[in-house]
Picture 1: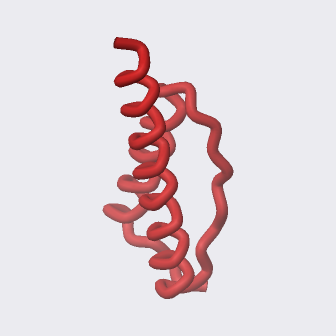
Picture 2: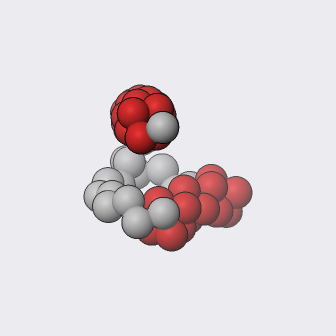
Length: 63
């Protein structure tokens, strides 16, 4: 398992704090390799994008 740099850990914690402060549930999953981290990061970004689209649809429907 590769140790994360302090900068990478800070980014991960910032993302977790943002989700928590927004009231969004999340599951922390450890990434043992750089490739696994890249795959999980891509999944995370895809999910955030789908949540944003869903929120925009709800916002548009409420107007």
